[in-house]
Amino acid sequence: MPRTTDRFSRLRALEPARPSAAPPDRPRLCAPDEEDALAQLLGAGVAGNHFGEHLAIRNWYSTPEYAEPSAITLELLSRTRDAFLPPKTRAMLEDPSRWLFLDTETTGLAGGTGTYAFLIGVGWWDAGGFEVEQFFMRDFTEEYSLLQELAVRITERPVLLTFNGKSFDWPLLENRFAMTRSIVAPKLAAHLDLLHPARALWKLRLGSVRLMELERRVLDRERLGWQRKDDVDCTRIPQHYFDYLRGGPVAPLAGVVRHNQMDLRGLAALFGKINRMLSDSADRLGEYDSLDLFGLSRFFERRGDSARADIACAQALALGLPGDVRGRAQKELARMAKRRGEHERAAGIWEEMVRDSRDEVHACEQLAIYYERRAKDSERALEYARLGLARLRRQRTASSGHAHDPSLASRLARQEKHLIERSARLERKAPPRSSRAPRRGAPGAAEPKANSALW
Image (cartoon, rainbow, N blue to C red; front, side, top):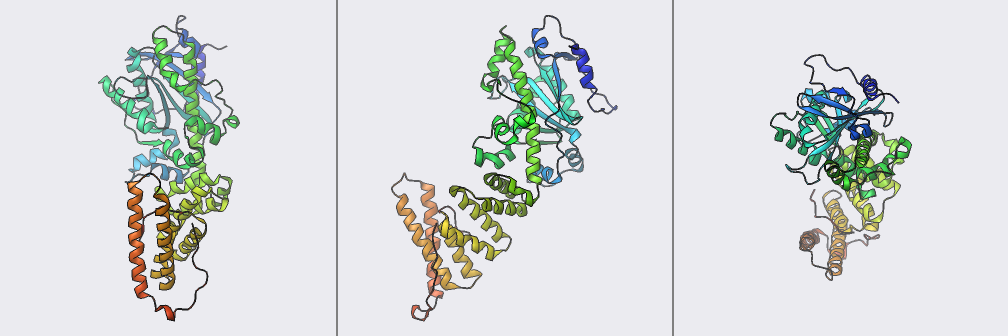
């Protein structure tokens, strides 16, 4: 078995060359002391800088493979209310060599000044695979050394990719940097939090979007060549660390380090999956689950890409959606068609909703608007207004026996008021009843949920 120092030398050779200008404070790596059982167990080296020492573990994995980010993915994941990105930020975002995946293991999940990140894992794509580096704090006195090394890494790779890192990991680390009063928190060029797209894409189908659940049901970790059969319970991680500080066993910490490694690899694989879904062409969408496609459609719509949202939503409906989701998808598709001025297409979707959806009141109201304003058919508009009013009143009667919901009652009252006013106006515009030609194919049936929308 090669010595620890030899292994670090070989791994360091895989690392891309760094700029020679203004070299950062590099750690001094040396073999652990014979008495350092934890370092021996983890295969770690002792890293040092002018703040002190900490343990460093370095590994390279052949999976997940490098995923070339598409321009569409970068645009959608980085899009904010302010669509403008400075040229320097955009250049870093488009250069994966400046990306750093990050995950922490902490002494608690509540955050605050008493919570420490005792293990910080970072990773990046290198040599066709994935490089993982971890910094371990053997004692609270090593925090400065560990944070200094993290600052160096982020300065080199200032585009951060995390899973819930915007809400937890990075605010915690910023707080720890501030507590040192000696190490300035490095400035990020961009921060892509993959929790939010993952929640949009898979929550409908999976319910839980924990990273381990995504690995099992979305990423196919068996194909990627890793298992979590003996994974440590994440709720026990803080206790394992505190037990170690009190002189307890070091063996559980090896499981914590492996857990952190797997989270980083899962994070990189998750980016690859999201990247493929966001950039796949329309003819490839049929390969995905219909619920995932509806989630993809909603993600596109929220990020302002209505054309792709329309395609994904239509494909989800074509593949078949559960009844409780189908009405929502039809409603979204009709709304997108209406917004683009495709009024006849929207009317066709609403008529289908009246026949087989549970949002029939909304569909009737929209059809009344369409026939009055667009088709100039007041009689047909009146038929749909009356049908919507009848269905709404039946719905209110059916729901009156349940627990009172003030917001639902208020919404139904508003809808009823709009339909009564519309029906009254249409009755005034309609020809006398005796002069009307008999009509066939009166409107049909279906679901509730929505306020009236005017053209």
